[in-house]
Image 1 (cartoon, rainbow, N blue to C red):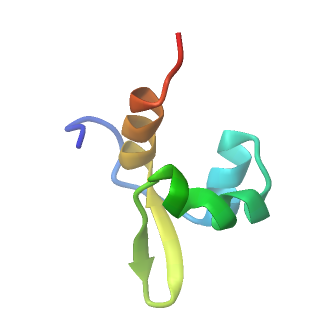
Image 2: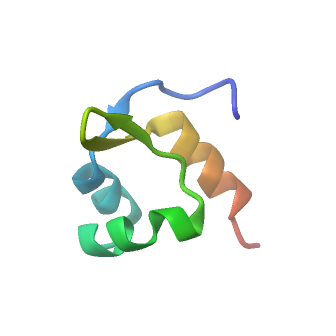
Length: 61
């Protein structure tokens, strides 16, 4: 993983808004897409730096 970026965890609603997709799409596809996720109790959280790294790896030119 990338050494830079924020360790802040964001909930699915915030990540969906950041990616400009619906929360339903995110929750239905994050495993298939390979987006790293952390569980905090029963809640899903996405680390900002992991998402930024994932986006960089899946960037199209």
